[in-house]
Image (tube, rainbow, N blue to C red):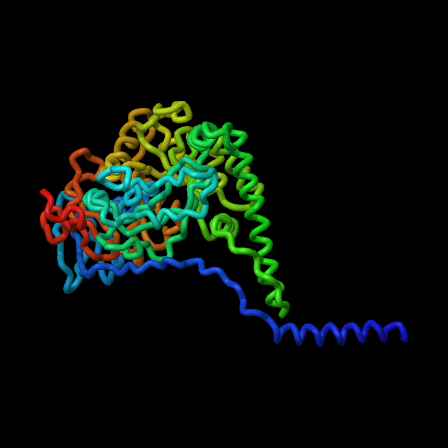
Length: 459
């Protein structure tokens, strides 16, 4: 019994010290994860009922002679031949209605028009890992490309930094509305993305400088070293938080803005968007994500996705692809025009059509149409209601905003495009475009053809 006395004394002392330390805690160190918050406010919303249209809902359904009601900024009803008191009624006989088009890969604003060196702010080619840069800090909201994209039915788009680096930096998702600030376009609560790049670009840019990576194995080494460091950074912050919660007074880890982004991925708050052409590299990136316990996200420019369509579907990866843009470098060589269709055919897949182009973004509907035509010519049976998903709901899934937009479902944002005809026709034109129930474009009314400050006074 006597042997317990010292232990009891020590326990009492420990309790006393703990109580004392609780009183001496420094202020808790926390990281503001949203220092540049969205200030986006929907434009004036109207109640609109579109009747007698062919409606593609974005969920794989087509409604002939369909109706869509937009009210209070959201899709209020979708169906056939209903009325709505007080609504502005559009007779869309012979016309089509789709959800707003979403481009998951754009550089508008960071590589704006006019394309001059002083405006080229989309690729921080100074180190293999520039996770600390954020594309939103380069966005020029007066880029006339936003207006041209709006005329093509684009209501939401992700702006990515460039592809020179293993880690290029954070992306930002924007609403395609007129604004003088980036924050005024920023999609509220949309997750950030992290741009990564496989293959030729990083090894060419840094290998020529005699800096790692100069090979694909150097690429992988660079990724692994960075994720290892990020894992330790995450662990250090979690230990700090846990110790502080115990009443201790730990020293906070040193803030590292580069590692903040990588930790955001490990915490499931930031989505990977990986420029990656070749099948074997995409497979390795999936393995890499398993090694460090994060999700590999979406593969962009996935030229060889068709070779590993099963793996992509099994691992829940989206693949963003072009219909017919390939062969411009060796890693972009082994393409088939049925690429999107093959990926899309797998249960659980997420096939996306993207632009990566200030011009193609204006006709993303036709890009999807080209794929549908070519695939059906070679034995597929893809319908319009299935093809529209590639540039609407699947794109929204890729960006982590599918609960808010991407389809014409009751309660989702009133992001709607009225087309003069079948949107997959080369003659298709967007006549009216709505974002959050506000008309942001009308082909026949200049009131809804906003011009950026840069274009004012120019013919």
